[in-house]
Image (cartoon, rainbow, N blue to C red; front, side, top):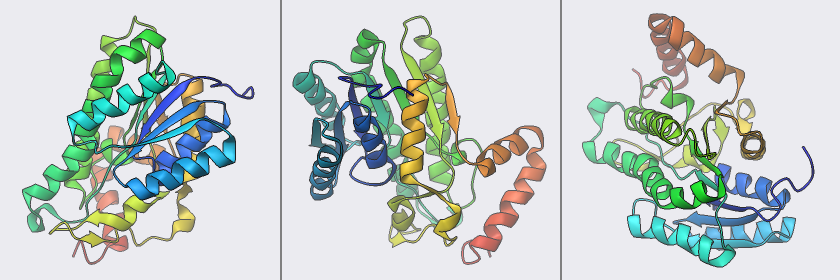
Length: 274
């Protein structure tokens, strides 16, 4: 890829105070983009903006934004356009997960996951769409392997990510002849803070995944891959061999996939599937 592939482009990323969002912002900034990062965690957001600007020299702006609030989503987009005069890329990264069987949880936990993962994507995309159409830019949805194959203990998370998949498939078709671009990303297991703050049955903080981080992609690797996929204007980005295999098995051998996924999570999360 040529250096500074996104010079003077404007990129907005939600949930970007840490993890994949922050790493993606860093990747775009290294390619010359002006980045606007949104997050509900204001102190972490300020620190992330300073770190990105210091490391890359890019113009970086942090905007506190709760993606479940329509007015915050509108303000995030409009702040970027007012400050930099345009919008070229929106990355819908903000999300939370859960860890509990449906029988042991409450509807409120699932509803909260849906509000953050799906409603936040809906609101930000809606407000950014006119600007993206004008610039013939890109809208990125961060889905998950759990959005292509249901995962036990993550009913709300899988539901939200399946909704994200359908939402962007519909939108991509609607804007097919406009010159704008839609990318849907399905990361595999990634070392990020989302795993350490998964909502349990009562929405308490609880470690999501007891597997060792060495088996996971790093957030920096994922961020770099996302930036490159936007540059290439790819349709989909599925990360990790395990992710590709899971989707393939689920498509052609769904019954076998049920058994293998159950066996995998039963071994990894004995307290959950017992």
